[in-house]
Image (cartoon, rainbow, N blue to C red; front, side, top):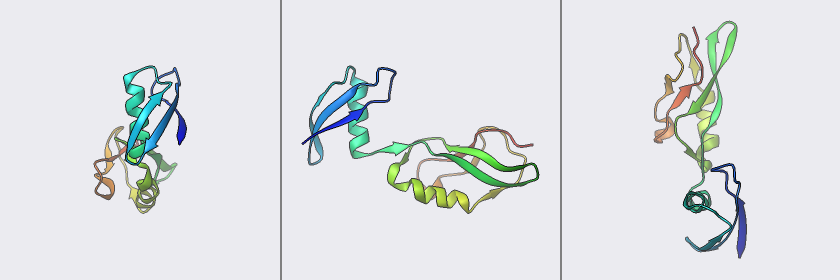
Length: 118
């Protein structure tokens, strides 16, 4: 069965057409670079996303701190990570890039601050 996916690695936005046979992709058409072919394989077999959200604070005037994962998280673990983040609260001060949750859910990703909090 032929499937389609738009590659988002560069501004070209190639429309990849490919066939999946079990745990293998037999051919990829429409990709103009090697990175695009790797993106298709990653997206089909191990999709992951950088998680961006907010973390509750105990600071008046700044009830939420924007945070993100420092590495992509497997797509099927995003909701569990969001629930874990929702159970956490931070006190200040916080520096931009500071690790707020180290190795969330025993993954190789940390949750870091996207801004400072005095």
